[in-house]
Length: 347
Image (cartoon, rainbow, N blue to C red; front, side, top):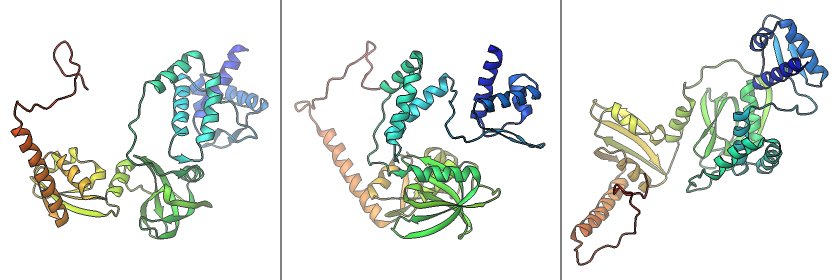
């Protein structure tokens, strides 16, 4: 009896992990016959778990939606991951789930074993986040949920979309993937009217509704969709556009320049052109100086003037440092030093 109960719990756990299993796969996982799997499925149904079965060669079992949420079976690592995810969601950028996350977290922590509560508390108490300079744009939790389900079910959706300049259009798309990049959420989808792949910022989407129509397989725009979104963001319209000649090989530079910084074009094996953009000239100037190679500004002229002003400011600072005399020392903050004499301000 105990062995049968343990097997039922393992079977229920497997059904909660994956969308659909064949009887053969479940039998192999539990080391029993497919007839035993059928009997165990009947027992789960008798206990109130809605297990759906699809007949045929390609058929299988899936845990269906019932009137109530069945108990979730989580191992130690899964329980810790869910608890930390709920804590993050309670203060995240998805609008409308903060209160629900707090309630769910309270229920979970109430039943966590002491050893797992200690793990969750340690990870939370001894982990710090560096705040972003600007608040993350909030996205609607309901829209994220609708889009995620549409991606899973390959169902077309319609929504209103506001572009960077405030223009609003109606879109009909085939959603493929959601990508969280930095502080923002993006949807990668096939735009049916434009007949091309598009990347949409989810915080600019509203009135998102599934239309019921399904769509078939379509080759995605890239194998790595995170890098694809980063490239799309880099070419999005911004206040300042610039072209920079970088003196270095393409192989060397592409390792130093993130995809979001812009597009890199090889010239002759020894130099490349970086097409980049930002909302301030200072941001472009700082970014190209951090690449670590010599460069020439092709355009715009305003960036040349800005970099010249920065260079003069740095030159004055360097000159002032060289001319400082011992009779006018600069007081530096005390810094703790280790026994070997190394500075211990940071590693």
